[in-house]
Length: 135
Image (cartoon, rainbow, N blue to C red):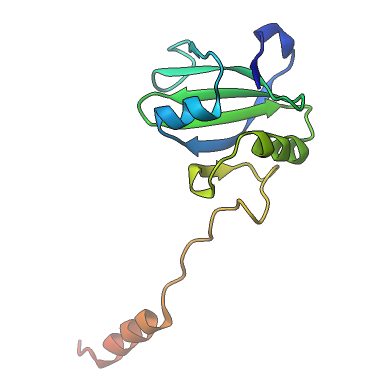
């Protein structure tokens, strides 16, 4: 991985993932120089940069100093699933570090769990109480 110059990417980038990382972990995963971002372009003090993976694809990475969340964006013309897989091969993220992924790149291995359904016992208890209550 290397830090790329901004003019190397001549198209917009689309957010494809949100990561939750400590500052140390961010620096371990992205061992390139990052710059302070424009304070008017992000919601919190952040650092970021354009990186090029050893396998070729580019990614824009922005790390929020307060939240510990890193947004990863890929070029809009990129084949998103293939470049996300290349990104994951080079940036070894733990599943718990991935907070969100775009449906453009989601795979069964990294999808967020679906919301928990209520237990049947809870539903039965609620029904039972309503039947026995006297109004």
